[in-house]
Image: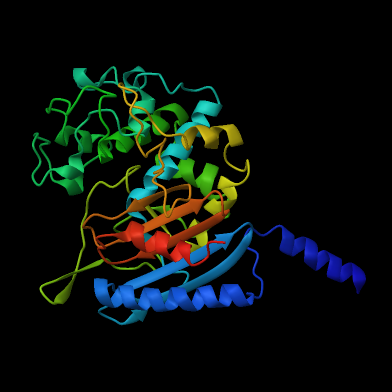
Length: 361
């Protein structure tokens, strides 16, 4: 019997998410979170929401609220699959830094060294400038109408066509002079991953990130595949909900689907060398500097804006496509929070970080 118990302890130890009975403080935090989320969902007209909280290697809390599909009143569950939107960019940054560790690129390499047929104004832009949004390339998501001719409907786009939407435009500023968030930067980085690995972006991320972290429900976006527990996206306007359904070329900029149960496992990557060396994480979490020396609250694929005076790394996603979410990792607390929703949310970052604050020591 003693050997059998020891075997069970060993088997449980290899799993990433360790469940334990919550203590009094954690129970109180969980109650506060539930009250806060219910109020937020009423105030922000949120259709469905799922969250997870992890400290050290212990999963403190997971819960789901509302509906993953409003038409059929399908409840959101902890296994609901959401579009994580721009949080995808952090995965793209991790993939890029893996290639850096392997010596396949330098952060100071110009992107034109690897990708052909780029506009002349883009050719000196470095991989670092793409990763920290200081490239000056116009973001295709920032235009109400496509400014440049692509010559086909978005449903017929192939890899690279999205770049044609902004390729005719001049740079918004000299690379490195300013910080300006944009999807084009990470679309280019996804093409870089494909060029250097000979695999699709989705294959590489699956093999090198999802599998090591046991993120079994995570995958690339598809508008046609049947995906169990997939949430539909919604928005609220003029006192009513409506569905947000698009077919856009989301890719390394915003093209990953996942669950909070999967996403919270990034905590283990942040605190170990499962994916990257500790020194590489430190490099990614170092504030970028502009040409004039000014510091910005963004690193390499991760936002670095502190919250309540605590050092934070993470990323938010959303922007009018029916989904919003965020991940925040607080280094001094060894605490990670993930929130995913299937409704447009104007301030998802504050929601995510406020949830985290209920668990601050």
